Amino acid sequence: MKKIHKSVYYHVTRDGLNIGIILGEDGVVCVDLPMSTEETLAWKAQIRELTRLPIRSVIYTSADRVSFEAIDAMNTPVVVCELARVQLYTPVEVAALNQFDASVTMIAPAQNKLPELSFSDSMTILLGPEKTAPAIDVMHQGGHAPGSVFIFVRDAGIVFVGEHVAVGQPPLIAQGNFEKWHEAISALRRNKKVVTLIPGRGQPGNTTITVETLEYIKTATSKVRAHVRARRARNELITLIPDVLKSYGLTEKIAAKANLNLDVVRLNVRAGLERLFDDLKNEA
Image 1 (cartoon, one colour):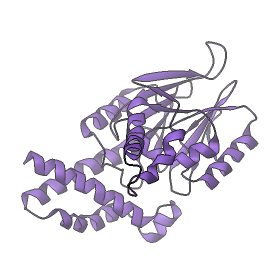
Image 2 (cartoon, one colour; image 1 turned 90 degrees about the horizontal axis):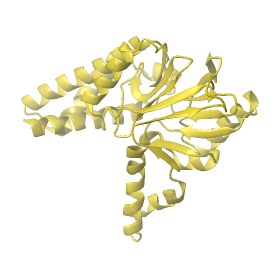
Image 3 (tube, rainbow, N blue to C red; image 1 turned 135 degrees about the vertical axis):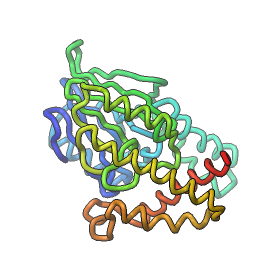
Image 4 (cartoon, one colour; image 1 turned 60 degrees about the horizontal axis):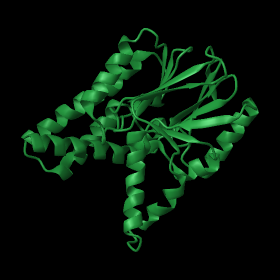
């Protein structure tokens, strides 16, 4: 756990994800959780060593960060954007309707662990009984994924931006709305109240750390567009992956230091490139 402000801490999970906590006058709010039960319980114990204030809620920055076993282990109210909740709820409905289909029933146990609280555009959480208490603004963005959000710690000028920003590695772009993504980051860069960004992955910093992510989206789009124009096949997109890893300097040794599994990174890059290919092919 690393202290970034008197009331804000972040932690890098075994999967290389940045999660965090925000301390208030009467409670603690968590930003995302680890993915496993074991690591979530260890994280909960770390929080308990830091403060005896109650953990009031967990706010998820996007649906793809949600782990139902982590929610179960933390046993705390969960907050998500309504669009993220829809993403999580739909597979459960499918499972209920197809309970004898082995390919979907595995999702059904999540039905009783869905987030209890949701919002559409924004919400504010006050961590104290007074109007002067620390405030957390949670704002829907929808760039990285339909229900993705920014979590702004108002008095500290700190924003948890989730998977909208990755530092030192390719961002996850398979679900992205790139127009909204660019708008969200552009607004952040114009906001003079923003001091520090905590990205979904990689080292925190000021708003300049967003450049790497936007440049990746731009470059990947350009390369896949050239791929489509050359009438190359979708399965040949794997030839672009080594250049992506090289551009980030991601060797096995460097990846291990950053808690990155290169096989997972390759899969994520491929999924993003394939999504771009499908979009650009349809445009053509």
